Amino acid sequence: MRLSIILPAHNEAERIRPTLDAYIDYFNDRYGDEVEYIIIVNGSVDNTVRVVHEYIARFKHVKMVDIKDRIGKGGALLRGFHEATGELVGFADADGATPPEAFQDLVDHIGDAGCIIASRWLPESKVTFKQPLLRRIASRTFNCMVKILFRIHIHDTQCGAKLLTREAVDRAVFKVSSHFWAFDVDLLFQVARAGLKVTEYPTTWHDVAGSKIKVVKSSWEMLLAILRLRLRYSPFRPLVNIADKLVGRHIFMHRIMQGRLIVQRQREKERTQRMGAVPQDSSE
Image (cartoon, rainbow, N blue to C red):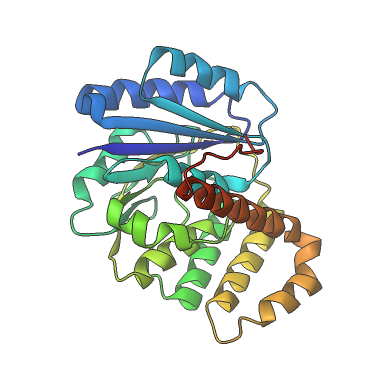
């Protein structure tokens, strides 16, 4: 069984080194040549690329794509899925919040599911250094909205560690069109629409210092993002363009347009590859 682990990284020079050390030590011992690490650096202005190059020089299973634009975590992950060759393909946060042992739990317990999520909100979960109260309230409110709007009965849709089968990747992942706040919900929704099971497993999770999220602003953007996503998958889809014009450009419209550009570039690249030539990707 080949395992692909994707790590999206935006300005993670300080935090990605211990994560790579831990993951490589743990998974190389267990999988040998059957594991690959795909780091998608996007929009970084620090030394993330240089740090990752150090690991590429030392370990043949480490790969990197350096995308100059800031395309969001979802955009980076979608690019990672395009690069992944594993029968199981998963992702985790570059800050190491999910230790490698907890990621292995996903591999061990995916069973007949198409996607398994590391959940911080199950009774058996072990969460150290809990998030601030405001972030926890925002998280639970967001989760309730997701359950109401999408009927996805998962306790922790936003946890940064998820694992999918190759079938789920091929049938669902590349239908995802959200690249920022709504990515995780869109991903799970597409897996469920493909008729595949989505499950979750209690995890060990550490809140690592250095988060760049501004809770109030991000919560507002997340709410708008999932409302927009719900409209896209409803008979009222034409209202999306109206909503974008009214509020999107003030909050996150630039991110939506950036996401559309990413999809367009990827489709052009795939189309050119099918014709037998490899295009020059201006984003790398």
